[in-house]
Every structure is written in C-alpha cells, then in structure tokens.
Image 1 (cartoon, rainbow, N blue to C red):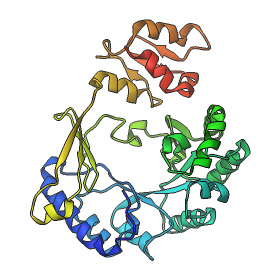
Image 2 (image 1 turned 90 degrees about the vertical axis):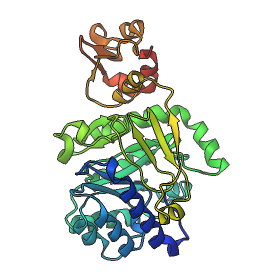
Image 3 (image 1 turned 180 degrees about the vertical axis):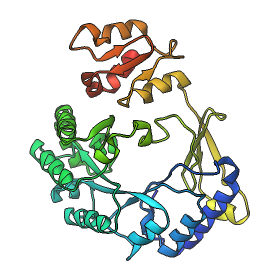
Length: 343
C-alpha cells in the first residue's frame, strides 16, 4: 500500500514495522526465501528504508516495486541492502493511455530507470504492462510490446485493465465496455508476441525471459499460487497459515499498538473453498501439470471427459492417470475451463 503526503510519518511507520517484525519473528523461518513489497517502498526516506532492510533476517532475495520517484543514489544502496529484483510499473508506453490510467511517470522515465538499473548491475528487472486500457487499439498494444521487449526485462507481467482495478472516470469505463469484445484478441497478441520473443508463459498473466526460463516455475511464482504460508506486515497486510484455514487481514492502528509492544488486530477471513478446490483454481494458472492426487472430490469427472483433448485437437485439457494439464487453447479460455472442471 502507498500513501502520499505523510513524509513526516516515514520514521514512525518504519519503527512500527520493525516492532511488528520482532513480535512476529517466531512465525518466520530462520532464513527467509523472499521479501516482497507492494506499493512504492522507494518513496520512503532512505535512512528509514535502510533501517527496515537491515532488520530483515538473512539471506534476503527481495523484490521491491519501483516508480519514477526514488532517493538519489538508492540503486547501489538497494543492492548493498540485499535487493536483487526490481519491478517497474510501465503499464503503457503511450502518453495518452497513461493519462487514462492517471500515471505520472512518462515512457522515457521508465526507459531511463531500466538503463540506470542496468548500469548499477541489476539484472532481474520486471516490467509490468496493462492491456485493454480504454481507448487502446491493437496497434497501440503492439507498440507497447515492442517498447517493452526492446528493454529486455527478465519478467513481464501483463494484466488486463479490467483485472488491474484502476479507478478511472465514467467516460473511460464506457470506452472499456465498447472494446470488451476485443479483450480476448489483446490477450492472444500478448501471448503470441512474448512467447515468440523467447519468454515463457509460466502463469496466466506472467512471462519470464531467458534468465529465468530454465528455472522451475515455482521459483518465480508467488507464494499465494503455490499455496504456501506467508506473513504480511503493516497496515492492511494479509497473512495466511494452514492452521488458520484462511487469511488474516490486518487493521490500522499499527504505530500506536507497536509502541505499546502489541500486535494490531487481525481479522480472520475463512476461505469458502476447500483446499482441494483451491489447488485446482491456483494450479491451473501455471504451465506445469497439476498433480491429481487428492483431487477426486474437487474435479467434475464428466467435465473432465468433455474437455479432455487427448482425442481432439480442439480440447482444452489433457488428463492422464496422475496429472492434468490445460492445452494452449484451455489456457486462453482460463477461468471458464477451470469452472467446468470443478465439481
């Protein structure tokens, strides 16, 4: 989460995060696998951010989301703090579409950031794109993909505008409804262009380049897709644990409670899905086969037979004795196929 206009609170908020980390330390492994930050952590005053990074357990393989604004000299400092992956929200390289998204950073800002990061020896740079922006044409999207590929990012998440959840004015929403029928074509263009350039379509909306292609998808996928526990720190953060059978969303009041040595209240959000159904929903987003052990009650066997592509080139799924895989066509249809396969 990013909040602007409260620069005077940076130090106090980091103090609260450090205190919360200390109170939650028993929940963490001795060595962390990944530290992920949403929002724009580099907006934080550098001394405060450095203090937070220094308190994280070793080793750190961190992923921090970057935007145009950053502390001067932050790149080498981030490296010294253990950051190895930087994510840039390009979204589009068309100025008029960035206006629709209310983005302040310009295309040249993104290009400069990538070049600066490369000069500082960052080789794991993620570049986010959005397709289906209201008013975007197919040629606009093609130019965005050209511009992104020219920068050779290691990963390139591509999200549809409707899923990105950007708040825009009513006129843009009307334009989005008019181009709704074109969304499937936009997605097909994204997949075609990125895979032709050598990127691996390892997850529904994510593509990884040559540096990561040889690694198993699980090395790049978020813990939420792998159905593994994670701890969220800070206001509005979400944590999951197998013991709670759901997610715990954190409320505000963090700085005041941390100063008293207390954790903020956390609300338990129990999932309405069984663990097996959730495995199907998340597992079929990946390009890896889904193991069928323990999923008998979660899968509709008749739906599985209807969609099995072993005897038909137009099939959307291929099921063996132990594994289930979506075909390329099935991956394009995505959630619709998954719903048909669920019992």
